[in-house]
Length: 247
Image 1 (tube, helix red, strand yellow):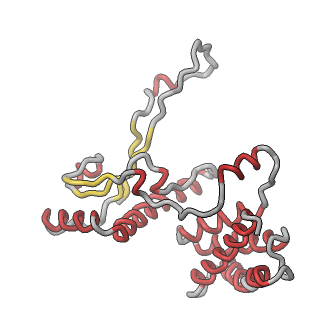
Image 2 (cartoon, rainbow, N blue to C red):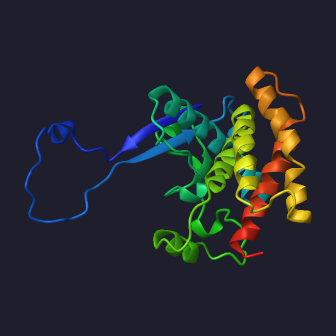
Image 3 (cartoon, helix red, strand yellow):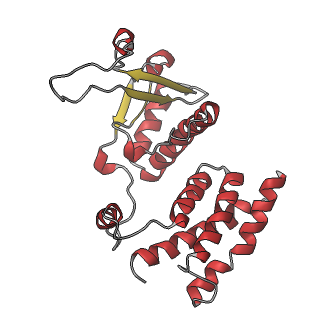
């Protein structure tokens, strides 16, 4: 069950301005925040079992990650549906790392829906999952891109979209994105078929991606599609990483 609530929304009467207004200062405006509560469909048999479940999560990082993944997947499915329903391409999905606060707990139905718990834990920002450290320097590349010293390859954005679709379980969309992404990547000479072992490895995924994309258009994806796409998207990500590192 998903419950969404907007907090700190400005009064409606303050929004009904049809003309620009003069201001004397440039103080930051207060902005509303949204709270998403994801509750299990079936209740715990007892309060003791709920408390035991929460205590187990505190001591098991993998189980806690699994709970977060499941909750974020529910929220992102709703955001994806909203993006499509409103035809608004700027509705974006979320991750635990970008949340202001992440809490996991249990309580009665009405209190949990209202953001309250009988008992809960709040994850510190430093305790949330982050990408593994590498030799990459995203801040330096960000500056280079803004300064025009580097250009964004079309394949970079396409691979990111394929990854997002794949992680969300949208296999048809991931297959179609990956098909265009690998063609753009190979055409960019980042890993062309004749560029050695790395390029040959990437080109080897071309046929599998094309088959998955064609199956997606027909609406009948084979059972091994997810695994094939995971391998292909990971190979494209590695090719782009080598380019960023100058390899």
